[in-house]
Amino acid sequence: MISGDVDRFATELNRDGVDIIHTVERGDDFNHGLYTAAIESLYETLQPTGLVMPHTIDGRDYAPAVASKLDIPLVTDAIELDAEDGLSVTRKMFGSKVETVIDVDDDQWAVTLRSGEWPVTRGDGTAEVRSHEFDIDSEALGTQAREFVDVEPGEIEITDADVLVSVGRGIESEEHIGMIRDLAETIDATVAASRPVVDNGWLPKSRQVGQSGKVVTPDVYIAVGISGAVQHTTGMKDADTVVAINDDPTAPIFDIADYGITDDLFDVVPALTEEFAGWIATARM
Ligand SMILES: Cc1cc2nc3c(=O)[nH]c(=O)nc-3n(C[C@H](O)[C@H](O)[C@H](O)COP(=O)(O)OP(=O)(O)OC[C@H]3O[C@@H](n4cnc5c(N)ncnc54)[C@H](O)[C@@H]3O)c2cc1C
Image 1 (cartoon, rainbow, N blue to C red):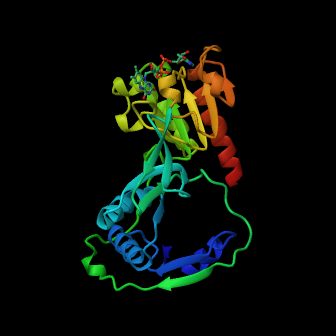
Image 2 (cartoon, rainbow, N blue to C red):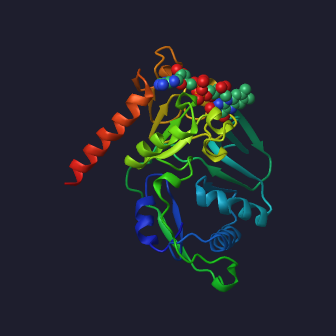
Image 3 (cartoon, protein in one colour):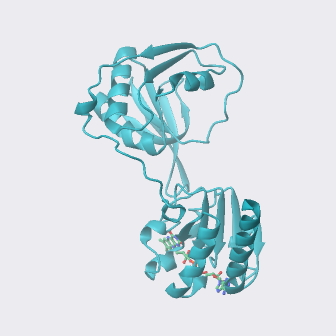
C-alpha cells in the first residue's frame, strides 16, 4: 500500500487471511511515476508470483506501466481469479455480454481487479506490517501533481458518476435538452444519453451509454424517454436503481426499472425538478 497515512490503512487492511502488509509511506496524491517506481521496486524486492492491482482510475493508469517495466503479462478488469494451479482469470467483454476465461502460463503475472466483485473480509487479522523505503528521486519522476480541481457534477465522466439522468429520443429535439440539464443540476447528477441523441448531435459521444457507448454502473440511473433497446440496456443494466420515465407502458425499459413513471416526460421532468428543488431547499434550511 502506498499512502501518506499508511498506519490508518494498514489497520483497515489487517483482516482475517492477510499475512503481511507491505507499506510505502509517500504523499497521498496519486503520481504515475512514483507509484510505478515504488511498485516496481517492491516487486523486485519481494519477487511475488502474482501482482494484483485495483481496476480503478489510478490502477488503470499505473498497472500497464508496471507490467511493461517488469515484463510480465497483465490481465485487466478481472471479476474472478483462480491462482491455485497456474493463473485463470475471468473477465467480461462486449458490454458484459460475454464472460471469457484467460489462462496465463507464465510463472509471474499481474492482474487488475474490478472493484465490488468480492465481499469485504471481516474480522481483526494478525498480519505483520512491513514498511519499505525507496530512494525515489521525485524530480526525476517526469510528472508532478500541482493541484486538484473539483469537477462540476454535470461534467463528471459518465462512468464515474453516482447519479445519471439519461435522455433518449423521446426528448424530440436539442432545444429540450436544457430541461434534462436542469433536473441533473438540481440533484447533482450527470447527463448521459442513448444513441439517437448522440447521432443527432444533441449531446457528445462521450455521453453515450450502451453497446457502442459506455458501460455505466451508477447508484441511480434515471432513463428519460428511452425505450430500453438491448443495445442500450447492456450499458446500464447493472445500475443499482433504475428509474424510467416513458409514456409507453409497454416500453422494455420498464422490465428492468425499479421505479417507473408512465407519463409524458415534458410534464414529469419539470415537475420532478421543481419537487427535488423544494426538498433540497427545505433540507438546507
Ligand atoms: C450495432 C448497434 C449498436 C448500438 N449501440 C447503441 C448504444 O450504444 N446505445 C444506445 O442507446 N443505442 C444503441 N443502439 C441503438 C438501439 O438499438 C436503439 O435504437 C436505441 O437505444 C433507441 O434509443 P431511444 O430509446 O432513445 O429511442 P427510441 O427507441 O425511439 O425510444 C424513445 C422512447 O421515448 C418514449 N417517448 C417518446 N415521447 C415521449 C414523451 N413525450 N414522454 C415520455 N416518453 C416518450 C417512447 O415511448 C420510446 O419508448 C445500437 C444499435 C445497433 C444496431
